[in-house]
Image (cartoon, rainbow, N blue to C red; front, side, top):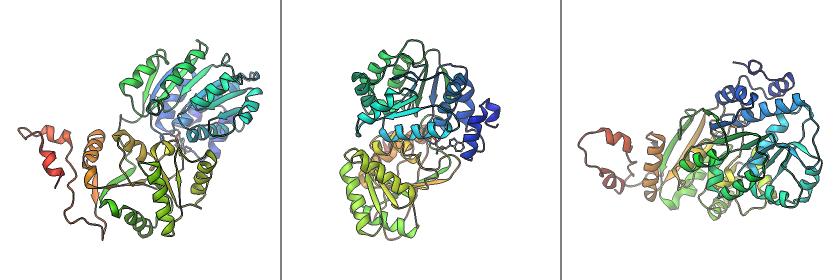
Length: 407
Ligand code: AMP
């Protein structure tokens, strides 16, 4: 399958060729023809599957061929994203794929001045990519009207709900014209997401590219048992021994992220932290330095890491395991993207064994345990068996895990 077989315009094919994409990814193959017909879509796709191009390419094509002028203070496609980084990333993709067209896009998120966004919106745009809070601010200040919206995209809907945006989203939907195309993307489809979707999409075509809560086969992931106090030393040793040049490290807390970055810098490994307490300027700078290779390690919290899109990110480290098993899938989805192989290592202490059990049950896999020289524990932790595997064995006592876990 090629991009031209999907019926895309030559101006878009040129932009795609500039990106050296050889062929459309599975979500692109499925979504592009459906979106071109104007139908609503409900798609289960994680970051890294090429989902952004899957919805931006057909929307660009429609507006490019319609060639209708933009009216001041209005936009034709509204894309809502949960984080600033993701908004910037999606806007970047729109710019990239529409570079041979005359379409205009505006990106709007909080944490930076609202005035430049108001000025840009005054001229009108084809694409408005925004986070919910800032969009509502702009609306309340009469900087934008929604009468001309043809398509509404809700990206990473699961994360939107996790971040408490449900009321903002409901308020925004009420302001949109009734007749419009709706697209909803989510990595997972829980009951709350289905409930939200029922209010947004109408008779949608459902597309799913990866089974719910599965990890990509191009990620080689493992756990390392370590004493809590040795985590920093282990991280520095791994970076040096394995000669990792670009590592994304996850910390459970903002304070922890700062501390990890500080400790790495003290060991002469260049590191920066990004999290919600950092200004937008500091986050953008850290991300740019990480992308350019000036900073070798980026330490992030889950929310800040959302939407970080770096091609061929080779290494992810879970310095702390996430409290929510689904976040493990999101985190390691940062590596091994679009055909590349990636590696993810999680540091596991005795307190984390139940979290490991939850993750393994979610992804239906036993995660490999790696032993690092100099860091072995006097009595190694036993990673729990899969519940599913146990359930298949007849007549075993139900609660064997608790004895195995706390050795
Ligand atoms: P996304 O899932 O939208 O976050 O995209 C993940 C990465 O895949 C981005 O870096 C895209 O530039 C890249 N990508 C998107 N489509 C393709 C494709 N057809 N072939 C290769 N890379 C792609």
